[in-house]
Length: 441
Image 1: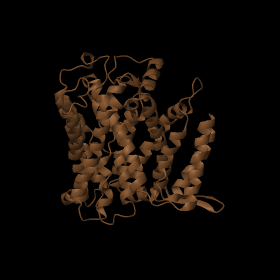
Image 2: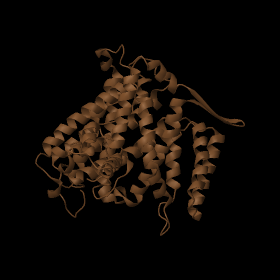
Image 3: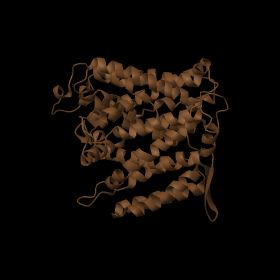
Image 4: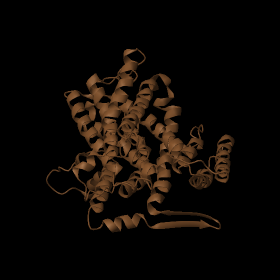
C-alpha cells in the first residue's frame, strides 16, 4: 500500500481519512528514527511533504479532535465548549432566513459537503468501480445489508417498549470505513487484497444504506413550497447535465439553492449533497470531468478541516458523574452490542449462506478466520454513527444517557478484537504471495 494507492487504484475518501490507532501509524509514517547528523533542509521538506500527503494524517487529526473534545468536555473548560457550539448564527436574505446554533451549522452545513464528496465517490464506484459489476458486487452488497439489519434488530431488542430510545435503532447500523481500513493498514501487506476490496465495497453499500435511512426515517414530511423549490433546483441541475454544462460554478450555485430548500423542507440537508453529486457530470469524453475535479478539490478540506471539526463538535462525551451503571443502560448496551455482535453476525451469516450455496466465494487470499476478523472490524462506528445519533436524539432524549458512550465502547472493542484476530489469522503471510490477475472474489 502506497500513500496514493490501495489495491492498485487511487484512494477515495472512504478508504482514506482515518485510522483507529493513528498514533502508531503516525510514528511509522514520519520515519522518526534518523541517522545521526543534521538532515538537509530539502530532505526535511520532503519528509514533511510526504507525511502530510500520507494516509495516516487525516486519521490522526480526527482522532486528536475526538480526544480533545472529550478532554475539554471533562475539564473546567466544559461550559465554554458547550457555549461555543450553542452560539446562534443567522443568515437572512429579505424574508428568507436560516437561524441555527453553530453545532447544527456544522452538522447540517459542513457535513453536507462531506456527503457531497461521498456521493461523488459512490457515483464513480457505481459507474466505474467495484459496484459496476453485479457479479463482484453480490457478496459485499448482500453482506452489507445483513450488517445493517442485524445490529438494528439487536438494538431494538435491548430497547423494546421504549419509544424514545427506539429512535436510535439505526446508530449501530453504520460502519466507519476509514477507521476500519485503518486497522487493516496496521497489518500492511499481510492482509490479502481481496479482504481490502471486500471491506471497501461493504462500506460503500453501507453508506448508501445510511443515506437512505437518513432520508426516510430521520426527515419530516416536506412542505409544498420547499418541495417545489428543491424539485425545481434538482430538475435544473439535471438539465445542466443533459445539455452538457461543464462549468462547476453553475452546479454549485443551483446546488446551494437545493441545499437551502432541502434544509427548510424538513428532509435532512445532507441529502442535498448526495443529490447534487448524482447530477454532476462524470463521463465527459476527452474534456475534464467536473465530478473528478470536485472530488479531488474537496478531499483536502473534508479530510483536514470538516471531519475533525465534526469530531470536535460531536465527540464531547461528559464522563463526570458517570458510574458503571450508566454503561448498563439499554441505549448504551444496544449500540455497543449492535456494533460488536450485530455487525459480525449479520455480515458473516449472509456471506456464509451465499458461499455455501455456491453463489459466491471467499475473497481472494482470505481464510474463514481472516474473513471473520474483517466482519468484526466492520463493527467500528464513528462518523456515521455519531451523525445518526445526533439526528435521532438531538432535542429529543431527555434522560442522562449519552448514546456516544455506546458508540465509543462498541467501536473500541470491535477494533481491538478484530485487529488481534486478523493479526493471528495473517501471521507469516505476505500480500506478495496472494497477488493474482483474477477477480478479488
